[in-house]
Length: 311
Length: 121
Figure 1 (cartoon, helix red, strand yellow):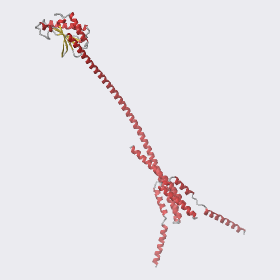
Figure 2 (figure 1 turned 45 degrees about the vertical axis):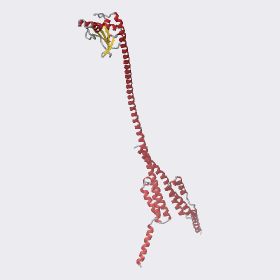
Figure 3 (figure 1 turned 120 degrees about the vertical axis):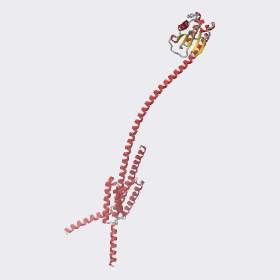
Figure 4 (figure 1 turned 90 degrees about the vertical axis):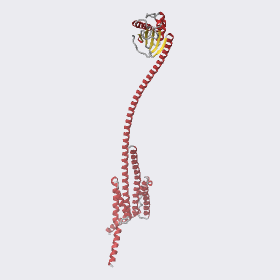
């Protein structure tokens, strides 16, 4: 019986003690909220609000000690919870603001870097453009110069072609003209005009006959149209007489024809003379006709224009 | 007799003053200005558009009504205590509505920096 009474007493004490120790939900929540706020950014960014929350919690705890289950305790605990949450919210807001300010500062810094880099890039690009433009201008100048050179060369080639055409035409005209006056033939050394010695000189003489001058005038007129050409005047004899005599005679006759052509205006420095003696016969010296053909003067009009000196 | 009557007069006067104070206090209207003002501030700061702030705004309004109900039942102390709840919830609603805007602005600023760095490595 005593044991039962003891157990009842213990149970009553335990129940009483348990009831007295159990705080209301509002106070439990307030304590938790305060711990959370203290662990968050409120400590750094909202110390004043956290302090107010602490004061509110202290009031709630005091009320809990005085009257654990009263409406006053619950209301004070509720207010303490809200103030802790308020401190947490303000701390979080301040932290967000700091984060925003830092982000904005980073943005401004990065933007400044970008602008600076952009300016540098622009300057470099302008410099490179200037260099390229300079190089292009130089290339263009060189190209223009080369083009002008090519154009000049083309003009010269065209002129030379035209000169060649004109020269060929003049040569053809001269050839046709000379063909009317004398025997004309194309050889490798040039155009060869053969004048009979019997028409130009008396036998054994090197003075032009007056009748020969008319024919030489016509030949000279034809030759003057190609006066830039070098010509060779060759004197030939038949086989009668000594070699030395024939050599001298053939040279004198060639000189006589040269002097006459120079007198008519053909450039002296474009004329060569050669005494060929009897060494280049074109007919048989055994017959009178053959010897007459061998006595001759040949005017060779060279193909190429060359500077020559008189012999 | 004269002395007694003087003491009696003083006691009577004190009794009248105490009675007057007691009656005055008990019949004083509930001071809801602080709570009402804070609730209005929460509404103007856009608390209704922020879920968490909206919750506390609603709680504040309900607690204000509860306080008025308690006052009407002549439970002045409970009513005054309840008003503290209403004011605390309204203050929290204001802070949460502002905090939401600040948070969004911070996130936007961080995102802006991220995009800038991404576009300009």
